[in-house]
Every structure is written in structure tokens, then in C-alpha cells.
Image (spheres, rainbow, N blue to C red):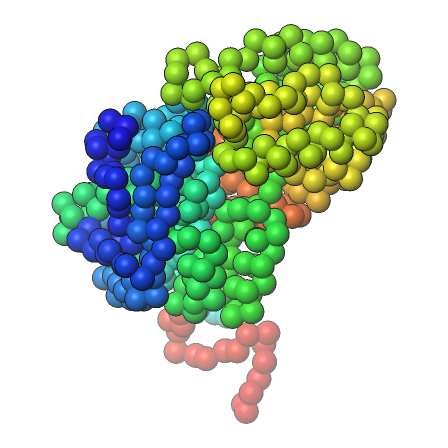
Length: 507
């Protein structure tokens, strides 16, 4: 067993159900989930997933704990979240390495993900003193109006494999300072990261003599997720995953009049103007397209380049791609690890075949690398004559499609003509061009950048996108409002009872 697992409390077999600091449950009725190392295809460790009885225990505990947790003043809740951030700091390297081991992203990206978890905890601490409402002048004399925000209830959080820690933290830290409890259903592909994080939160909550705020339900397949989505005890479901699954989640939650935060697919494009700084462009594109082996929702998939610089930029990208070291993600110097499983490899190969059949030219990579491991591939660059149906779809793999344009209006039309609307960027040294891209007639994405790539989001801003990306917002800005219920209040401090709109009733 890998030595870092012991430091994180991971054993050969692990319980995957937990209802607080002293609430680990071994549920023999649940299936066994095996975490596979994508680097070599070998098992890392196993997790005993939740069954029907343990599901009820966890949800009931989260519901009961909500009554106590929501009564705690928000700044006090923030102090506890700060303690969680500090506990993550103490485990940043082993937890980051576990993410690298389980997902296949390189070590620095794994550690960076834990840093993101720490950052959102820090953000949440300050936010716990800023859950502001507004005051409003009333049209009625002797009256005052204001709004306030109250805790919502137990929050269901369902996350994906590619970021097994950060999206949980985005939701859990903000939901917790808002006064909510959290039940987490992680991807069955990456259960060990979730178990390790649960150990860390359990330690902190035990020190504070609090239980049931952060809870875990590892599930195999969609069964646990479906129960959560249809469970009225969860007023809010936050789901990160595919567009197809997200559609079903949104429909099912809406059918019971619940709320959902949907963070779905991205098909992110970069527009490269004729005056772009190509040094900056190459660096941004390579990280965006190759980072996490192209398995980020913010990965760069489309490059829309002015015809005057297309050849030069393509040549520079090919040269840079040829220097990318592919291999063990935990080894120093590696820049790209494996895809998550064989199915992802097959989907990449099918996409490349389809692209070439529709007129695309594979100018770099796209080969399997079985000599390194079963899930390793070369990142691919494909020049396309136009934006085909395939290019409009998201392939979760390191494929970069390059297309050309003549006028900015054409570039924007190409950029916006995909169903997804998560992240976007433009590279230009022209202020007018940049402002056009950022205007209402420019990018239709939730994230729009200038001279910085599509991948990588700072905690201070709200994260999310439009169209098929789902419309949800997490992390920064006023995303906290999604985890609370708004209440409008009118106080009459006069001795009269005037009605709104000047209505006279019975006088």
C-alpha cells in the first residue's frame, strides 16, 4: 500500500458512510467500490459503499444536526471552517498526492486542488460576517422594510472524479457558514479522496464537540445519487457532472420544487486576435488543453485563430507539445498523466477518427502510449476546416481543435455556436477588441478572460456557466445566496395601518 495512504487514515478496506465525527458505518448491504490507479490500472484500496439503512442514518443525522448548527452564530461557524482550512494545510502534500494518485493529474495540480480547498475555507471565514441583507424605504409612513437570509437545510453535494476535493469544498465551506449541514456523494471513481477529507473534517468537528455537519455517502453507480436527488429532505442539490446527467438531476429536483446548482460540461474556446502576444497564448493554451490530461470542465478545446497568425501559432504549439513529458503523475517533471480509464481513451480515439473523416487534419499526437500504461495517450492537435458537429460536443480528453476566422464577428459567431457556456478567453493587445469580447455582444460564457486562459478559477469570483453548463454559480461573489432562503420583512412602527399602493379598505 502506498505510504501516503496511512498518513490520511486510508487502509486496504475503508468505510464509505459517515454521519459525523464518530459516525463511521460499515454497511455490508452496500456494494464494494474499488479505487483504481489510472497510471497502472491497479487497485489502490477499496471502500464499503452505503446501503439503504446507512443512507437513512446519514440523512437523519444531517437533518437533526441542522437544527443545532443553524442556531450557532455565523461568525462562530466561520471559525470552525477556518479550523478545517488549517487542518487541510497540515495535510496539503499527502492529500494532494492522493488526488494525483487517484485521478492521474500531476502532483502540482493535486496539491493545487487542496490549496483551492484551503482558499475557499479562508474566503468563507470572512464571508461568515458578511451575510448581508438590504434595507428599503417603505412607501408607507412609519414603516421600514428589510431583507434577511436564513439557513436552508441539509444540502446534497454530488461531485465528479476530475476534481474530487475542490467542488466539495466550494459547496461545503459556503453552505456551512450559511448554517447548513452537508451530505456528500463523491464520484465512485475517486472515493478515497472523499474518505480522507472526511477524516480531516471529523477531527476538526470532534475537537469542537460537533457532529453531523459534514457527512459522507459513497455510492456505486447512480443509486445513492438518485435517492438524494428525489429526497425532499434536501432543499438544495448541488451537482457537478455531465450535461446528460445534469438534465435529469435538474428535472427531478424541480419536480419536487427543490433547488439545484448545476455545474455541467464546458466546451471552452480561446479567440486569438492578429495582434495577440503569442508567447502568452502558447503558454495559456498548452496548460488549458493539456492540464489534467484535458479532463477539466474548463479545459481549452477550441482555438479560434485569425488566419494571419494561424500557421505560426500552430507551429509553436506543435513544438511545445513535443516537449511535454508524459508519464507517472507523481514523478518530478511530468506534465501530463493518464486518462481516467480505458473508456476515456476509446472516446478520444473515436473523436479523432470522426474529426479526420470530416475534413480535419491531425497535425500532432493522438496516439496511444501502451508502453507507459493502458490509459496514456499523446495530446492531440487537429486543424478543422470549420466547426463541425463533433467540435460542438465536449470530448473529455486532450484534443485541441484549431479553426480560422477573418473578422471578429465571425470569431464570436463560431465561439458562441456551441451548446455549452462555461469558460472563454481572448488574446489581444487591442482594447477595443477585448471590450467587444467582454460586452453583451461578445462571449456568452459565465467566465470571460482577456490574455489569460480558460482553465483555473480564483475563489473570489463566482464559478459557473450558461446554456448547457447549467447556470449554477459556486464559490465566490454572492454565490452564498444560493445556499440560503431570503425573507422580506416589513415593520410598522406607527399607530396607523396604511395599505400598500394607497388602497383604502373599509374606511
